[in-house]
Image 1 (tube, one colour):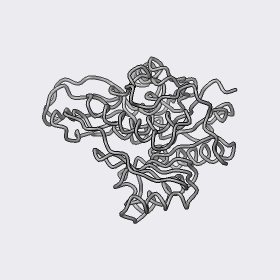
Image 2 (cartoon, helix red, strand yellow):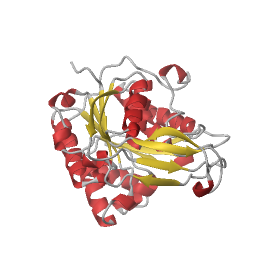
Image 3 (cartoon, one colour):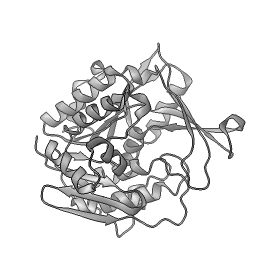
Image 4 (tube, helix red, strand yellow):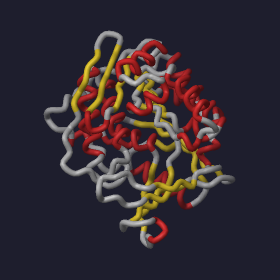
Amino acid sequence: MSEFDILSFGETMAMFVAEQNGDLAAVGHFHKRIAGADNNVAIGLSRLGFNVAWLSRVGADSLGRFVIDTLEKEGLDCRHVEIDSAHPTGFQLKSRADDGSDPVVEYFRRGSAASHLSVQSITPQLFNARHLHATGIPPALSASAREMSFELMTRMRDAGRSVSFDPNLRPSLWASEQQMISEINRLAALAHWVLPGLSEGRLLTGFEDPADIAAFYLDQGAEAVAIKLGPHGAYYRTHLDQGFVAGVPVETVVDTVGAGDGFAVGMISALLENLSFAEAVQRANWIGSRAVQSRGDMEGLPTRAELPSHIPDRSHAPAWECSP
């Protein structure tokens, strides 16, 4: 039996969040946190009681030590985080946006330690995890990180483990849009559960309607697809069922960053508990709505005890049975 339920991987950056509104150039005070879509999901799943292994790489610097310390305090198993003495930990600057608009984010990650992830970073015990969550961010960092992504997803699926994939498109990290679309769709074909946003799905498939986008990925080998529709909720489709689950009304949107990661936390946790896909989307919508009501990328992600009574919870259910 594996000592952890879920394997996730990617780049955790240090993040300096402005403590006042306005142009980042004029801000004099920042608060240090961590950032990264992949680790947001890992942290969210850890808060819900799953044992999560984190595969990554940081620099041999103070930011790297800060990243590991923060992730370990969130309950992640960081024994598979490599320390790179030749390349730095990436970081970002994030503006403060109090009106619900998307904050300005400036990245300093080119040549970072995480961009040097490779298949050599993989150890055999990682394949004992029940589930793998992957996104389109690590494969955008470098050719070696992309090769590692394909290796992990291929071997986990071949081993009969469940695999989820969020495209999480980062066009600025790719050589071209054509390459991004091609590589992301190749990776999505290795996943059981594909979780794109509507605009991402339209770009990646060329289809406009959520039903057609979902059908595209079902035809490529997915067992189920959930398409995020922002505040309107989400559309889901499997080979046997499809439907729309309305969004959760939010009175005040504080920070939109991390909403999609919260959605992924809800989907993955619920499906690993053998809830139905409709129930999983219901939980995903609720966690996504909670995320936008908190300042920070992962601060709004709930613990198990914070799930409301109307959200289905089957935390002691057996693992999802998936096809290779």
